[in-house]
Image (cartoon, rainbow over all chains, first blue to last red; front, side, top):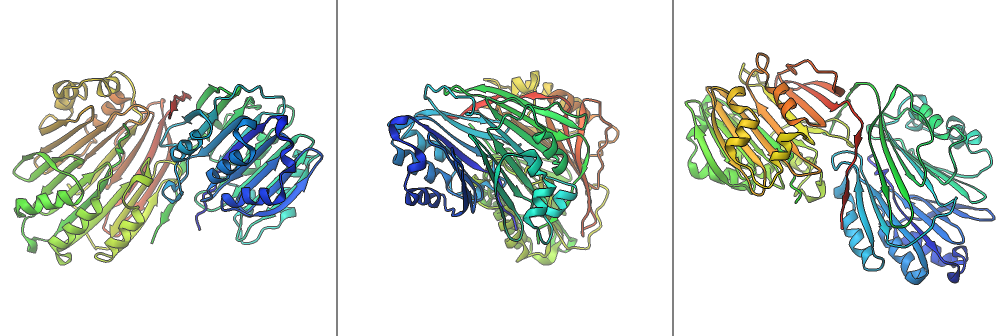
Length: 308
Length: 308
């Protein structure tokens, strides 16, 4: 019953000479998703953005920007290479590719370094690991473009590990319903203006995409016992709301990572949260990446997993 | 320059009907080691025990007990199966097989579960994982024997991750000498009565076996930058000495695990050490396993590893 919740992600920005990415043929978009071994499950559109819920995470397409995330054993690198070749390197103004360490790296079709070798044949860039090899760590490939991110070109990523409490219990229970998940996560209040597209997987698992004007958010929940994982990603400015602190209070993770691209952690911590590690990196593309790692401040009694 | 420091280990106990394990032919002992892809580098003997420093860790042989540890990408499972078949299942009174999670699991020739499938064809037992999948965790296969451990059949394992300070700097430096390592680790005082067998690897890395009467200890150091690892294992009673607290003070790890087989952690912690998790398991073979995980109580600034 193990599912690798950790996402791989790529983000590409293009110049206007290419024309809008939203005008790519529907067939091309489907090929893009198929390259990762994923399917489109549903989609929503706004004036600015198209958002697709995938069998493994999400795809967002703006006129000049595309973000694709996939989890499990998906081959996102194939989608990234397909995307670069379809758009044409000459039209790409910024490109990044990320992976999170996986629990079962031996089940992945490629390593981050394998992926970087292939990317570097098309786009020169810098590959970095942030975080210790024997703990949660983040791999970032960032192209050498001279790019100037705009106010909406920033990202907040929140990765929550080992959730607990009543919502965690419900999410890993025998049956879940979208309205209840929605209510438990308090999404209508946290993302009041957003159009939502939600999907509940069997026997459990949940994805939601939300879009509003130029903004997006996406939440993916892998609630499996012994190794639950929830991710939030958004370009919304979280300074004036309580999204992060509310999600932490609802989901009660034992560990969580914040990764900000031109975003800093917008909350102050309670005594119960302890910052174990932090890093700050300036990339060639005009992004400052802030990474902070946290854990709940208590001694945990380990559950023993019987393997036979 | 990455080397997988984490050890795999098996321990086998036999009945007197087999005759002494020390009387196994030297050729058989060499085959045993070769099965793991390792070589014997040197050896020492006492009245009770033979101890071998291997190219990947250590082998200890008593009349009625054998312990073998190997690190790197070694195939210890082959040695374990060879050992069981050479001794004969009917002579084995207790058997256990352990693995630590690896940093690069995808480089290992087998997973713990692969190994357990093969072991279970010869010896029935229980396989368990202790610790979270996304953190340091320990795999233990313990046979279903009805065994009564004696006073020397216990084990203290100490695994120290990310060492720091002057000794760590020396160990990862351009040149190391056995007398200096010996002095920095304070081995002559911590293990005063023991006969030592030490080996310094190139460009770095250090192993020591020590034996005295029925007792053994072994320390293995993988001092690589970004991912250093030091392990101590012994059946010595550490209640009345300072081995653990002194090694922690000298090596200053950011994280460390204690695993005791019929041994409890013999020290009280300073304020600077924080226990993040613990577990207690009773095995079928008469062992109580205590696992405790610790970390230094400070926010660390992550170093960024550039991968290209």
